[in-house]
Length: 362
Ligand code: NAD
Image 1 (cartoon, rainbow, N blue to C red):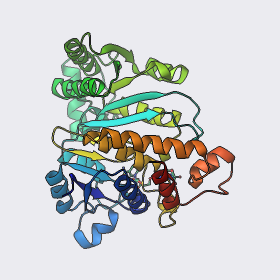
Image 2 (image 1 turned 180 degrees about the vertical axis):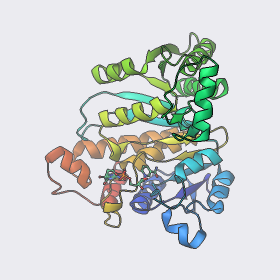
Image 3 (image 1 turned 180 degrees about the horizontal axis):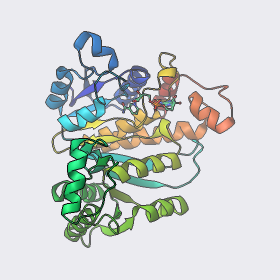
């Protein structure tokens, strides 16, 4: 019997191609996995009436762990992003985005090894918004004036930024627990508490309280988000685990991904108390779909995060080391890496050939 049953959502666009390659590589690590294939994507709209069928949500709830390829966000259909829907439905409050240098990927920086932990459920992403000119916006503007909270121009649109003690505590605790479990030394809380006193200020206050529980085990510091960005560009090696509210987390994690080579190699995960959905950062790259040339590295690194989450640390490490070896040699790499390294795609290999090269290094 398989040791683990995992929901695999291949997605659409390049998703099915890179998922197939990932499945082969993970199976080759020797970890015994039964893959339960579940569907999501715009292509289901006609047959199922939704891009995210209930059977897919049920499969994740049953298995607790899923790995997902990218899905195209249907435009103009009234459906919001499938990814946002999954995060809400499963309360996946942590977005985990490690960023580490891989030789052979044309990275600007060397020796980066940091982890971005982004809060996934609140902040300006809560979706509490008032359109300019609406009754809600007018009422809120009046209310703020009455309360002496400040003057808002009458022709303003308004987005609310809620940050709670509950949301802050659980994400900061998650970051510290991750640091402990993964041999990390420090956690840095990133905020703009000097300006946004009651939202970011609360996040920082809670972060300091949580940090006390880990005193002597994990170091703690905090940075204002703008200074943090400058520090990342000047000296990224100074950072270890960063924990951020949703919006700063979104921006800073992309900054970090860019510093280590970009979308084709950026892994990620959305994790909650009960469920975890592992997915690369990149999208469905529709223009490359069906050609068998997409780079599966981001999904392979994502799979290594999943293996570590499943307690298969040895396989996770072997997988990352195999990827490192193939990229370092640079001879059997996909078109995007080849182009970055040589300025031409000549001599690049297919998705499956790259997967074979990784398997040979396991
Ligand atoms: P994208 O990530 O699909 O593509 C951006 C660029 O990176 C393109 O040039 C693409 O060819 C390249 N690229 C991305 N992944 C690659 C890979 N593995 N190998 C080689 N090249 C790769 O971003 P986009 O074009 O903005 O989005 C396309 C669709 O994907 C949209 O519908 C978007 O909503 C969706 N999307 C989904 C997810 C997800 O499911 N998690 C994430 C982001 C975007």
